[in-house]
Amino acid sequence: MSRKFVLTMSIACFAIGLFISKAGLAEKTNKVDSMYKELELFSDAVSIIRSDYVEEPKEKDLIYGALKGMLSSLDPYSQFMDPETYNEMKIETEGEFGGIGIEITIQDNLLTIITPIDDTPAFKIGLKAGDKIVKIEGEITKDLTLIEAVKKLRGKPGTIVNITVLRESEKKLLDFAITRSIIKLESIKKAEIIESGIGYIRLAEFQEKTQRDLETSLNKLERDGIKGLILDLRNNPGGLLDSAVDVSGKFLEEGQVVVSTRGRVENQNLIFKSRNKNKHLDYPLVVLVNGGSASASEIVAGAIQDNRRGLILGTKSFGKGSVQTVVPMSDGSAVRLTTSKYFTPNGRSIHGEGITPDIVVEYKDRPEEDEKKDNDSLKMLEGLIEVEKTAEEKEEDKKKEYDNQVVSAIDVLRGIIIFNSK
Image (cartoon, rainbow, N blue to C red; front, top):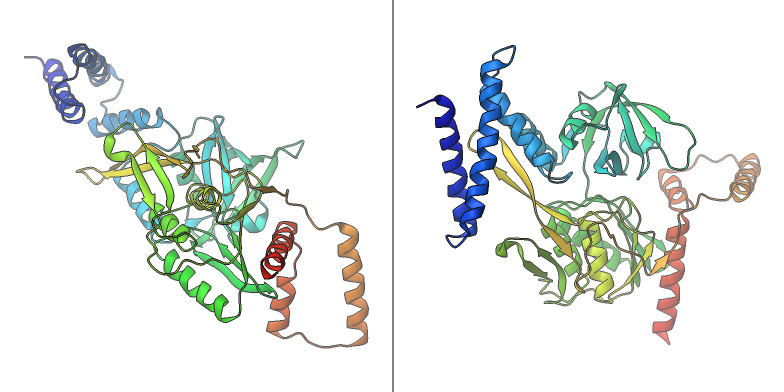
């Protein structure tokens, strides 16, 4: 028996066993026959490469290459990860890695920034949600997979990576030289009273510790006399599903639907409900979103909106509403596969659609004349009294930085609070 035939039969038998276990014994014979033919094609190609390629190929490289191509052909989020890449992914989920600090996807065949992560090199240098990365170190990114792009962007802290960006509002390409650093992912970036009775929480990422951190922040704000809350999910790329369910549950009654998932396999069709057994928080709520709000952020925004628990303000979210399941393989590699999609409590698909705010407010930079007027007044005052500002005073100044979407949210909450008090 030829080695080619043995390889064909081995692969075919494995595949059919998997096929039957998943689909059941009642599958039609023609589907099995079709699988045989497709696997024979694959086997023929492997046999030709092994016998005729100019250099003797490594069999593992052939199989890994085939698996990478197979998974990447499905969608931008399905991937085959070799052991090294899988280990890097696990390091990232632990909350610290070396890179520039962006979440990326492939959109319209272009490597696209979902959002720069707060306080990272990418954020500080001015990269924006929606920017298209067309080159990394001079290499065109069009044919790169997500994993390949991530590998090129990450590196030793202190080293520089050069990227070229296409930005919709600019007429020419933009070049950036970005110094990599250790990226520490924090869940809660800020929690404070920004107006009398109005609290503000900036939630940057949904992690395992998010529920605990949110609980601590909310308790502090409640001690300070909170009457209304702004939950800022702008430029939040998402994270863990369980964390999104727990965050939503803080503001919903026990048993209210947060999100559902739907897939081809029955066990992927799930409904997630609020499991908050404590008294839910019932003060007025405004959730801020924008084009950098994705995945878990959109789950929270959709749950709040569909359950009529609060108002969503800002601009339309990204629309990343698919669920990836990571399956470790026997050799230390792993398959990351899209297995279902997210739907809001009212049955709206998040994927490709995003969450449209109840109140649409485009982000605008502070008018130059207002900023100049404030700077002139400040200089005049500093000329009259030479006083070194304390750390607390400097922090207070930061709170007053102009953000028209936050200002709009404050106005909305003021109105609700006044109306409720009558």
